[in-house]
Length: 238
Length: 300
Image (cartoon, rainbow over all chains, first blue to last red; front, side, top):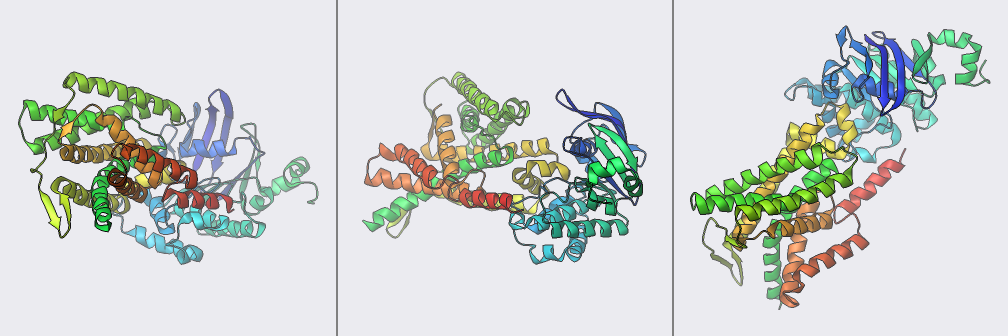
């Protein structure tokens, strides 16, 4: 579905991605794990077109996206749930959802219908639909960020650390949502630091170190590899 | 005594509606870019000079002057946007502000070369008449300015809250980064905000200068000051704040002018801003936004 081939991304002269190759297959949850500074968010930004890679290429279903602008990439079907949620704090929840459908044609009659679907999926957003989004709790903001990204009708959903800064119970809830979305057929590329939760939903895992993939495989394979398990899950897990 | 005060308030609201229009233009650009365009006033001044030039050299027609002023302001506004904002990186807020100051000097020079004398007449749509309501009265130009301000505010509200480009402008000013993620073309939106601000400025400039019936190169300085003060009184980047700030400034100035000393009128504006910045740094409306924003960031 989504492939990156040897992408290299720089911040000025600092190289953040060094020939990164990964693939997210249709209908699966692909998870990218790695320590701080490994290039996880940079990977997301490069795929979403916010940063440009100097070499290599990015494909979505055999369509090359490497040189497309960020707004073209949203239209082609990649939506990002950004780190720290980044909702529109001074707009109502309903307006946030409308804004999420910005890449669709404005007279698309199904937008209203899709908003109702989001309310069904996230009843708490419906209760507060007229409230300003900035007044929501962290978990609710994360739900809003997911709903906003889904409003773009993406083929693949990129999620950048959805568990960041949330209470453990809320993290559980968010991962339940991720699993549900995936069961309904949504393809997801997930970046996480919370390896334990991520491994429970992932079909395929990439470990990132210094802008490169240092390991890739299924969650079972990670559980079999003592060294990786120790580094990413801690020693107390057996 | 009390009728004097009410009459001053009426005068203040009328004059303040001009300030409100200037502040709306400032706040549109500031909201979207988070950068100050100091040459906003001078670009209106140059636009108005284009209008005056047409009046003196082509035809003595108020409509022609209105369109000349608006078109001139928009062209100069686009020039400023290209030079001071688009070509300078988003992070260099100070560089943009300083270069907009440099452009200000340039615009004043151009205006003085276009029409070298100090003062020129500026036409109005109708000759001044007094409308009387019982004990109170208002000048026709001021009444027009006030009513047009109300109409423009309603149209602007409709544009921002009911249309797609309006949604883009609000999204960019609310969260510039997030607006990229949902597929908004940011530079197009900045351009649009500049265009609308210039349109508002052109109309405001025409109305204010018509009421004064003359124009000098100092109008640029005057418009930037009044617009900036009104915007900061109301709260930077807030549309209702711009309107309230403009009207408040007008009312305070009119009362100081009447009760105290005409010379104190401009000083009272700065004093008002000074007091506001100490006690409510976010302005009338902005304060709650500042607080709300803080709460939103703290709540995780």
